Amino acid sequence: MAQELERFAANEVDEYLARIRYTGPIEPTLEVLEELQRCHILSVPFENLSVYGKEEIVLSKEWLFDKVVRRHRGGFCYELNTVFSLLLDYIGFEFQRHASEVYSRKTGRIGPPFDHMILVVNIEGALWLTDVGFGDSFLTPLLFGCSADQQEQSSGTYRIRKEGDRCFYEEKVKTIVDEFDPKSPFTHDRICTMAKPWGRITFSGNKVTKSTYLGDNKIRKETKELLGGEEEIVKELEQQFGIKKESCLYPEGSMYCGSDQSKERKI
Image 1 (cartoon, rainbow, N blue to C red):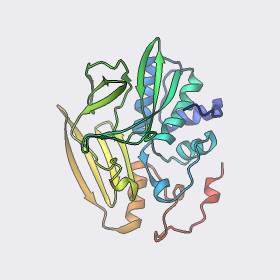
Image 2: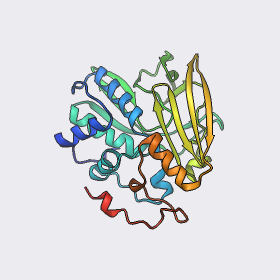
Image 3: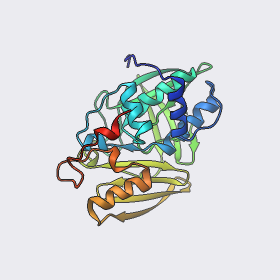
């Protein structure tokens, strides 16, 4: 992942930090990294609305900053972890971007190369797995020691283990969403999910699911079906995720298809 990207300016960092509601110190420490990832995941949704709406995706600083920060959108792994890496770079963190593969416990298979993107941050010689773009993910970085040690978080129990020349990140938590499987609606339907202090809120298809963490790796699910059509879906996206109608492209057949949103998108 050696792509060179333009760096953030100070005013862009200020906007970014306001977007994720971070008000702490700006220094390359583990405490800052943990809080930045937590704030990002609690503020920026994982979503595929651009893919579903056939919007062109450009992994450049300008495009990602406009989408995630100024338009208050989310994105998928390559978008979110790329723009987050630019923030880490400005602050002075030492890190590497890595392509990775997603293992499906359901099928027992490993996904194709470049299926996912992660960040590995080096802090005083310790490597930390950092990821703000995996949908249902860990809230703070995991120590990348390739050991069998479990790492507890409110969202579940995690560990990183080594098998041959591969390192696997595993989670022990009842599945909140199944939509991230390659054969799932993620590839052909809208999905948007964001962590909350109490759990997670997920929109998929025409349903919204509230998942509340109960402790001991248990959750409680409450699902609401959106019967009001496109208008109710748009309202739900804004209320639950802060995504406004004018910040999205909608597919042919949608009530908003064909609307000219170029003016709203100008920086």
